[in-house]
Length: 195
Image (cartoon, rainbow, N blue to C red; front, side):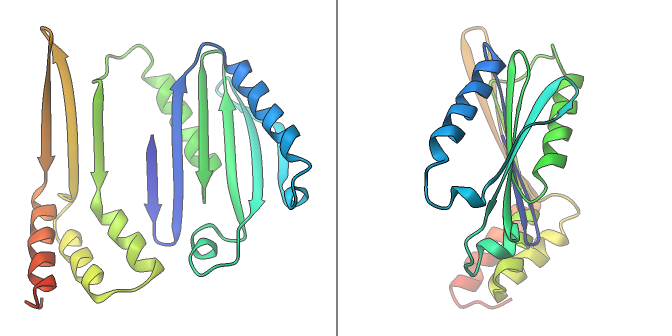
């Protein structure tokens, strides 16, 4: 699963291996069919078989975004959802640039087929998160911490990795220098220390 954050933009993407991708598509179609009688569903734009990318069948839904202070800033007037299915995979992306990001994930997945992967491997880059937060509602503390991460020369992430061998799991947590500086400065500011 991936979450892509940019100033005033958010996209979430997930992919899984499944026994039969066509069953996923059938389930989505059944859910849409049941939802047709719900109030407000007429405003949802559903397109089954909207396209095919690298062997993955794509289906789209675009639904109105409630007019509130934050949702419309991030998603605009419509929330875009893309569902993809192949023989043994299912994909979903929701957000600002859902189709573009989903196609990138499909291409990446096809290019790395058969590669060994760790059971757990996650990386969070904090700079995009802080820029996103500051773009939604400016805050001097977040702005100052964002500035620290911008000066960290790409050392803005937290990473967790687990590997398995000889009947044991080994975990590794890496917190990069920029994150440590940001946390230290944030704690100092929270205690009235200034910047």
